[in-house]
Image (cartoon, rainbow, N blue to C red; front, side, top):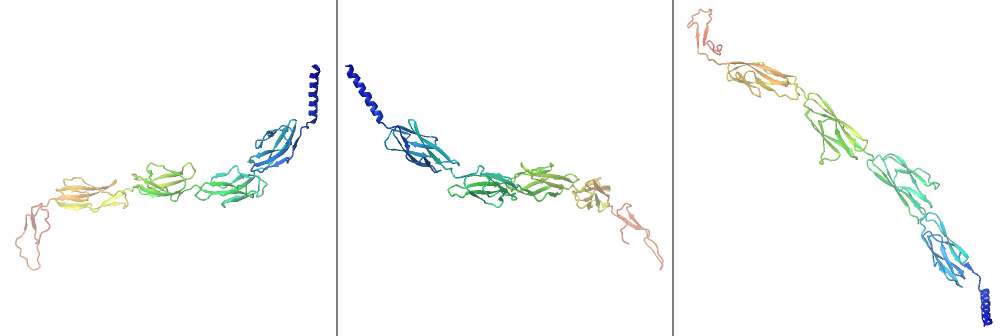
Length: 415
């Protein structure tokens, strides 16, 4: 029994040695190209190899994927698909695919060119109205040309490709409107997208006031100031007798001011500042207002007047100067029981006596002495002779006696 068991074991051992001596050694051979070129847009390819043992495949970078990633030993050719994503960078890149089988390994290199393009980090410029230069940084791996849409922007740097910064001069904006232009970076490679840079330039701020001096009469009134502006502004009078009238009914280019009456006899002057909000533009307006013109004299057409009770006569007052502000004449009587005066200068005799009629204008006055008498009619008249005989050539004077002695008119009688 022991001999039989020993013989069986020995047989198995001999068969194992014979099988081992007949099995092939491990072999891993790449049958396709050892380097793959994939376009920048991405795509797929494949690698082929033979492996007589179980194998695995791995990629060194995530942008390269392989399918399948492992397999069993095979007597034929193994094909593994290789897929690459788009190269969104602007640099060439490469990765390796490693095929492993037991202690053996083989590598295939995958190469992908850079994405062709132009990158402009700053694509918009907002500029003030003054002249200046701007610098545009261009990152490009293709040749390109530069064009500017407006003449007020000029390229001043080199036109070669030796620098990645382009310099442009921007002229001062002397207009009163904002303006814009574009700078186009156009690649010579038609597959690469062009880049457009926006340049916006602010308006030249304007606050224009043509009339800055105004002469006003003492009585005041309104002033309309024409303002040409493309900025917001404030209106600030320096004195309290000038007022800014804000009204939505007026256009934004008209400033309305009201000036109070000057109640004094002295001329005066005020200032109005029209100033840009949050800016430096300003204009100062000057308003000169005349003072009142005082009366210097007043004269009456008569300085004395004799009236019979019940009679009336109108006095005329002349006020100087002719352009006096207030030429109003005020009339009064020193004794209204003797003579009265109305506001038109009409004097009316009331009773016998003497009164002064006073005409006043401003601080000046004039007087007229009015004498009022009573009308006593003549009652009788007699002559010193009722009969008179004269020789030719002789003469004699008659004497008339008028009664009563206080008759008003004793002089007017006929013989």
